[in-house]
Image 1: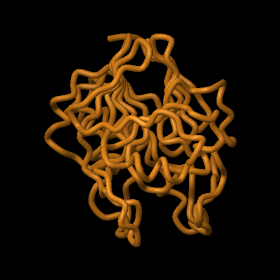
Image 2: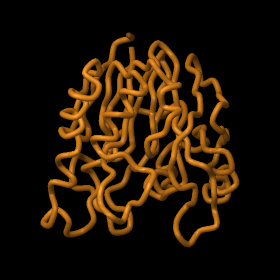
Image 3: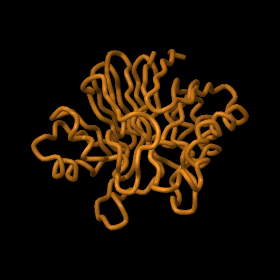
Amino acid sequence: MAHLTWHGHSTVWLEDSGVRLLTDPLLRDRLAHLRRRRGPTPRLPGAPDAVLVSHLHADHLDFASLRRLPARTPLVVPAGAAPLVRRRLGPAVGDCIELAPGQQTTIGRVTVHAVPAVHPAGRGPWSRQQAPAIGYLVEGETRTWFAGDTGLHDQMADLGPVDLALIPVGGWGPTLGPGHLDPHAAAEAVRRAAAAWAVPIHYGTFWPVGCERIRPDRFLDPGEDFARHTATIAPRTRVRVLHPGQSVTVPQR
Protein backbone atom coordinates (compact mmCIF):
# COMPACT_ATOMS: atom_id res chain seq x y z
CA MET A 1 0.00 0.00 0.00
CA ALA A 2 0.97 3.67 -0.33
CA HIS A 3 0.44 6.48 2.15
CA LEU A 4 0.43 10.06 0.95
CA THR A 5 -0.08 13.58 2.22
CA TRP A 6 -0.97 16.35 -0.21
CA HIS A 7 0.66 19.61 0.84
CA GLY A 8 -1.02 21.68 -1.86
CA HIS A 9 -0.10 22.49 -5.45
CA SER A 10 2.01 19.55 -6.75
CA THR A 11 3.75 18.80 -3.46
CA VAL A 12 3.01 15.27 -2.27
CA TRP A 13 4.73 13.26 0.47
CA LEU A 14 4.52 9.64 -0.70
CA GLU A 15 5.52 6.59 1.36
CA ASP A 16 5.76 3.14 -0.18
CA SER A 17 7.81 0.09 0.84
CA GLY A 18 9.58 2.08 3.54
CA VAL A 19 10.72 4.75 1.05
CA ARG A 20 9.72 8.39 1.48
CA LEU A 21 9.47 10.54 -1.63
CA LEU A 22 8.58 14.21 -2.05
CA THR A 23 7.26 15.57 -5.33
CA ASP A 24 7.79 19.10 -6.69
CA PRO A 25 8.28 20.68 -3.25
CA LEU A 26 6.80 24.15 -2.79
CA LEU A 27 7.21 24.57 0.95
CA ARG A 28 6.76 28.31 1.39
CA ASP A 29 3.69 30.54 1.40
CA ARG A 30 4.48 32.98 -1.39
CA LEU A 31 5.99 32.65 -4.85
CA ALA A 32 6.12 35.90 -6.83
CA HIS A 33 2.47 36.99 -7.25
CA LEU A 34 1.09 33.70 -5.90
CA ARG A 35 0.12 33.30 -2.24
CA ARG A 36 -0.91 30.22 -0.30
CA ARG A 37 -4.64 30.59 0.39
CA ARG A 38 -5.57 27.09 1.52
CA GLY A 39 -3.90 24.70 3.91
CA PRO A 40 -1.06 25.12 6.37
CA THR A 41 2.56 25.76 5.55
CA PRO A 42 3.97 22.26 4.93
CA ARG A 43 5.68 20.56 7.85
CA LEU A 44 7.35 17.39 6.67
CA PRO A 45 7.55 14.36 8.97
CA GLY A 46 11.27 13.99 8.33
CA ALA A 47 13.83 13.93 5.57
CA PRO A 48 12.71 12.44 2.26
CA ASP A 49 14.78 9.67 0.74
CA ALA A 50 14.55 11.52 -2.58
CA VAL A 51 12.79 14.41 -4.29
CA LEU A 52 11.07 13.96 -7.66
CA VAL A 53 11.03 17.10 -9.83
CA SER A 54 8.78 17.01 -12.88
CA HIS A 55 9.91 20.13 -14.79
CA LEU A 56 11.70 23.44 -14.59
CA HIS A 57 8.86 25.88 -13.90
CA ALA A 58 9.47 27.84 -10.71
CA ASP A 59 6.36 26.51 -8.95
CA HIS A 60 7.66 22.95 -9.41
CA LEU A 61 11.42 23.46 -9.19
CA ASP A 62 11.60 25.96 -6.32
CA PHE A 63 15.15 26.36 -5.09
CA ALA A 64 14.12 28.18 -1.91
CA SER A 65 12.07 25.12 -0.94
CA LEU A 66 14.85 22.69 -1.85
CA ARG A 67 17.20 24.63 0.44
CA ARG A 68 14.82 23.91 3.33
CA LEU A 69 15.48 20.19 2.99
CA PRO A 70 18.50 18.51 4.54
CA ALA A 71 21.67 19.16 2.56
CA ARG A 72 22.51 16.57 -0.06
CA THR A 73 18.99 15.18 -0.32
CA PRO A 74 18.98 13.12 -3.55
CA LEU A 75 17.11 14.72 -6.43
CA VAL A 76 15.59 13.06 -9.48
CA VAL A 77 15.17 15.59 -12.29
CA PRO A 78 14.39 15.69 -16.02
CA ALA A 79 17.29 15.06 -18.39
CA GLY A 80 19.15 18.31 -18.89
CA ALA A 81 18.17 19.89 -15.58
CA ALA A 82 21.16 18.85 -13.46
CA PRO A 83 23.54 21.70 -14.45
CA LEU A 84 20.94 24.31 -13.42
CA VAL A 85 20.22 22.51 -10.15
CA ARG A 86 23.89 22.13 -9.26
CA ARG A 87 24.62 25.75 -10.07
CA ARG A 88 21.72 27.09 -8.00
CA LEU A 89 22.09 24.81 -4.98
CA GLY A 90 25.87 24.83 -4.85
CA PRO A 91 27.55 22.77 -2.11
CA ALA A 92 24.18 21.70 -0.68
CA VAL A 93 23.36 19.61 -3.74
CA GLY A 94 23.54 15.83 -3.38
CA ASP A 95 23.02 13.15 -5.98
CA CYS A 96 21.21 14.67 -8.95
CA ILE A 97 19.85 11.89 -11.13
CA GLU A 98 18.68 12.86 -14.61
CA LEU A 99 15.98 10.77 -16.25
CA ALA A 100 14.36 10.87 -19.66
CA PRO A 101 11.16 8.98 -20.50
CA GLY A 102 11.90 5.26 -20.53
CA GLN A 103 14.72 5.52 -18.00
CA GLN A 104 14.56 4.50 -14.35
CA THR A 105 16.39 4.58 -11.05
CA THR A 106 16.11 2.63 -7.81
CA ILE A 107 15.55 4.31 -4.46
CA GLY A 108 15.54 1.84 -1.60
CA ARG A 109 12.87 -0.74 -2.39
CA VAL A 110 11.06 1.25 -5.06
CA THR A 111 11.79 1.79 -8.74
CA VAL A 112 11.16 5.23 -10.19
CA HIS A 113 10.44 5.36 -13.92
CA ALA A 114 10.37 8.58 -15.93
CA VAL A 115 7.27 8.71 -18.14
CA PRO A 116 6.22 11.17 -20.83
CA ALA A 117 4.51 14.47 -20.14
CA VAL A 118 3.30 17.14 -22.55
CA HIS A 119 4.27 20.48 -21.06
CA PRO A 120 6.61 23.38 -21.91
CA ALA A 121 10.26 22.52 -21.37
CA GLY A 122 11.61 25.94 -20.40
CA ARG A 123 12.27 27.51 -17.03
CA GLY A 124 10.25 30.58 -18.00
CA PRO A 125 9.54 32.96 -20.87
CA TRP A 126 12.87 34.79 -20.52
CA SER A 127 15.07 31.82 -19.68
CA ARG A 128 17.25 29.75 -21.99
CA GLN A 129 17.14 26.81 -19.59
CA GLN A 130 15.44 23.81 -21.20
CA ALA A 131 14.66 20.29 -19.99
CA PRO A 132 11.69 18.28 -21.29
CA ALA A 133 8.97 17.80 -18.67
CA ILE A 134 8.35 14.30 -17.36
CA GLY A 135 6.09 12.43 -14.98
CA TYR A 136 7.03 9.53 -12.74
CA LEU A 137 5.77 6.01 -12.20
CA VAL A 138 6.78 4.78 -8.75
CA GLU A 139 6.71 1.00 -8.36
CA GLY A 140 6.84 -0.50 -4.89
CA GLU A 141 3.99 -2.29 -3.17
CA THR A 142 1.75 -0.08 -5.32
CA ARG A 143 2.13 1.52 -8.74
CA THR A 144 1.75 5.29 -8.37
CA TRP A 145 1.69 7.71 -11.29
CA PHE A 146 2.73 11.25 -10.44
CA ALA A 147 1.79 13.08 -13.63
CA GLY A 148 3.65 16.31 -12.83
CA ASP A 149 2.08 18.83 -15.19
CA THR A 150 0.86 17.63 -18.55
CA GLY A 151 -1.73 17.72 -21.27
CA LEU A 152 -3.46 14.63 -22.59
CA HIS A 153 -1.37 12.27 -24.70
CA ASP A 154 -1.77 8.78 -26.10
CA GLN A 155 1.08 7.25 -24.08
CA MET A 156 -0.98 7.57 -20.90
CA ALA A 157 -2.60 4.32 -21.98
CA ASP A 158 0.78 2.59 -21.74
CA LEU A 159 1.10 3.34 -18.02
CA GLY A 160 -1.76 1.31 -16.73
CA PRO A 161 -3.08 -0.25 -14.81
CA VAL A 162 -1.91 1.93 -11.94
CA ASP A 163 -3.03 1.73 -8.34
CA LEU A 164 -2.91 5.49 -7.77
CA ALA A 165 -2.82 8.55 -9.99
CA LEU A 166 -1.71 11.91 -8.60
CA ILE A 167 -3.26 14.01 -11.31
CA PRO A 168 -3.19 17.79 -11.95
CA VAL A 169 -6.66 19.23 -12.43
CA GLY A 170 -6.19 23.00 -12.26
CA GLY A 171 -5.60 23.86 -15.92
CA TRP A 172 -7.99 26.64 -16.94
CA GLY A 173 -8.11 30.08 -18.46
CA PRO A 174 -6.70 31.71 -21.59
CA THR A 175 -3.19 32.36 -20.26
CA LEU A 176 -2.01 28.84 -19.40
CA GLY A 177 -1.75 27.57 -22.95
CA PRO A 178 -1.32 23.90 -23.94
CA GLY A 179 0.14 21.27 -21.69
CA HIS A 180 -2.36 21.35 -18.83
CA LEU A 181 -5.31 19.24 -17.66
CA ASP A 182 -8.63 20.69 -16.59
CA PRO A 183 -10.98 18.49 -14.53
CA HIS A 184 -12.63 16.90 -17.58
CA ALA A 185 -9.34 16.12 -19.33
CA ALA A 186 -7.87 14.82 -16.07
CA ALA A 187 -10.75 12.33 -15.81
CA GLU A 188 -9.92 11.11 -19.31
CA ALA A 189 -6.27 10.79 -18.27
CA VAL A 190 -7.05 8.47 -15.35
CA ARG A 191 -9.31 6.45 -17.64
CA ARG A 192 -6.44 5.96 -20.08
CA ALA A 193 -4.09 4.97 -17.26
CA ALA A 194 -6.68 2.58 -15.76
CA ALA A 195 -6.19 4.07 -12.30
CA ALA A 196 -7.80 2.27 -9.38
CA TRP A 197 -7.55 5.42 -7.23
CA ALA A 198 -6.97 9.06 -8.08
CA VAL A 199 -6.13 12.12 -6.00
CA PRO A 200 -6.49 15.50 -7.71
CA ILE A 201 -3.59 17.91 -7.18
CA HIS A 202 -2.23 21.18 -8.62
CA TYR A 203 -5.22 23.37 -7.82
CA GLY A 204 -6.71 25.55 -5.14
CA THR A 205 -3.61 26.30 -3.05
CA PHE A 206 -1.70 29.23 -4.54
CA TRP A 207 -3.85 32.05 -5.88
CA PRO A 208 -2.84 35.20 -7.72
CA VAL A 209 -3.46 38.22 -5.54
CA GLY A 210 -7.09 39.34 -5.86
CA CYS A 211 -8.41 36.28 -7.71
CA GLU A 212 -10.18 34.93 -4.63
CA ARG A 213 -12.54 37.89 -4.98
CA ILE A 214 -13.02 37.66 -8.74
CA ARG A 215 -13.28 33.94 -9.62
CA PRO A 216 -13.06 31.79 -6.47
CA ASP A 217 -14.72 28.92 -8.34
CA ARG A 218 -11.64 28.54 -10.50
CA PHE A 219 -9.63 27.61 -7.43
CA LEU A 220 -12.09 25.87 -5.12
CA ASP A 221 -14.09 23.70 -7.51
CA PRO A 222 -11.65 21.71 -9.72
CA GLY A 223 -11.22 18.80 -7.28
CA GLU A 224 -14.92 18.13 -6.95
CA ASP A 225 -15.43 18.79 -10.67
CA PHE A 226 -12.78 16.15 -11.40
CA ALA A 227 -14.54 13.65 -9.12
CA ARG A 228 -17.84 14.32 -10.90
CA HIS A 229 -16.34 13.89 -14.38
CA THR A 230 -14.46 10.76 -13.32
CA ALA A 231 -17.67 9.14 -12.10
CA THR A 232 -18.90 9.31 -15.69
CA ILE A 233 -15.72 8.91 -17.75
CA ALA A 234 -13.81 6.43 -15.56
CA PRO A 235 -16.37 4.91 -13.17
CA ARG A 236 -13.95 2.20 -11.99
CA THR A 237 -11.60 4.84 -10.57
CA ARG A 238 -12.18 5.83 -6.93
CA VAL A 239 -11.46 9.51 -6.33
CA ARG A 240 -10.31 10.91 -3.01
CA VAL A 241 -10.46 14.72 -2.87
CA LEU A 242 -8.10 16.02 -0.20
CA HIS A 243 -7.64 19.44 1.33
CA PRO A 244 -4.04 20.61 1.56
CA GLY A 245 -2.45 18.93 4.56
CA GLN A 246 -4.73 15.87 4.49
CA SER A 247 -3.55 12.29 4.04
CA VAL A 248 -4.88 9.03 2.65
CA THR A 249 -3.69 5.43 2.49
CA VAL A 250 -4.27 3.59 -0.78
CA PRO A 251 -4.30 -0.22 -0.84
CA GLN A 252 -2.55 -2.33 -3.43
CA ARG A 253 -4.83 -3.29 -6.31
